[in-house]
Length: 261
Image (cartoon, rainbow, N blue to C red; front, side):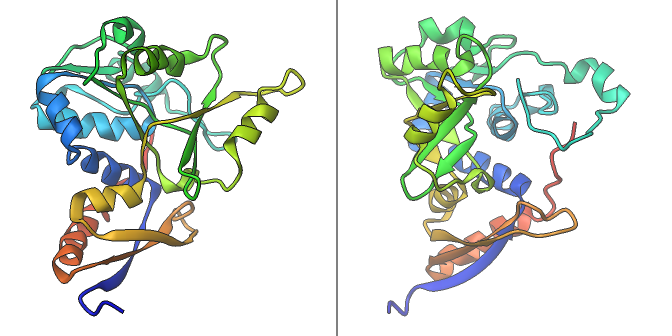
């Protein structure tokens, strides 16, 4: 046993996990370079709302953005009702994806507007709906009849080697083989959303901790009640300095509010 390595446990809510992932992406060297010198497309999604906030704060335009309606499709509890004020608030209407060109937000654009112009070195950040940690696989639900945003993104990713990042929280973990799941859900005999396994840089809370502190972490337990449903326990192993850094980081995330409409 390495006596220089210590292990501590932390609990995170899904919202705190989204914030952690968003913060960590700014520590990635490729993203840091692209944010200043190239184009980054943050495709709308609830996790990416946190990503967009962090990125836009970094370039001084965070006050111009609201994540409350930064999505195209979401899963809500049965019977959930959004308030009338939320539904009619112009600030919360969907205004497009977040496209940042050389450190400046090009407002009103979507992945469909810019996919053809993206080049090698540019970055697309797209959320996902399922992650298999052991297989290091991610998959996306597709409701649109022509494939939605991921098909537009893949034109740039496969055609021009644009890099894809997939921020996804641990609450979306599954254990199945995503290729087999896709075969079943995409069958002519199935109903509901379609399912696409995708290849890219998967960033969960585990990768986020590594990026931000250098400590290694693993999922060790999950669950909770009274609003902690979906939460999970992580065991992080590292040096005293790394874990002290992680202590400060986790402390800053404790009061992250749950996502609301």
